[in-house]
Length: 102
Image (cartoon, rainbow, N blue to C red; front, side, top):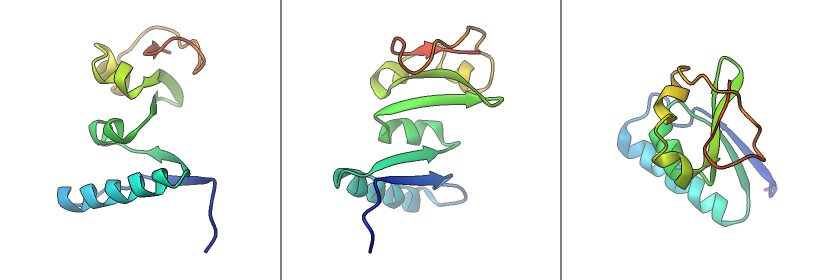
């Protein structure tokens, strides 16, 4: 079996029972622990945020908010950005933690 440098997952929890979702994310953590970078596209924002080192909230094809798990977990505009309600312009991933975008 190959050892990929990057694993891309699209909606890994879609339609799954919570217990199965937990198992999926446990496996994701195991793979990540082996040094594999993982890109997860996930509508279950709360679950994805728990597993992420860095998060980008996209809406309408644009990054609305980005930052580390710690910066976004308590960010007052996280939910607004997720639902497309954030109104500030994004500075890019290299900017400050919890950066908002348009």
